[in-house]
Length: 73
Image (cartoon, rainbow, N blue to C red; front, side, top):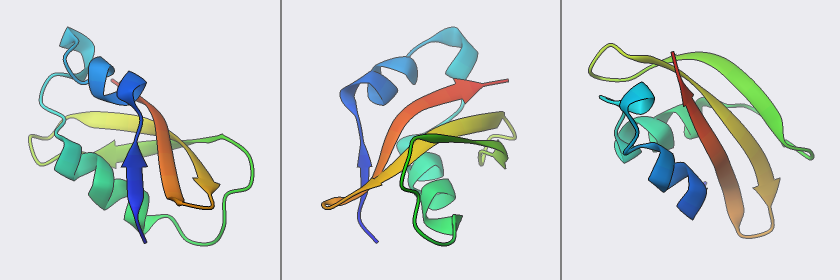
């Protein structure tokens, strides 16, 4: 499945709260989600390679799975 990371989510990765979370971590987490996500939904408890815990807000669109935002813990 194709994973699309929005510009908002990419910008959030540069913030201190999301430090240590890479785009590869987001793609990996988004691909783990089963089924179809019709409305924007928050998924909690992913772990980046750096050990940082984060949440994703994701929605499926015709072009693929869109990651709307990333929330670091």
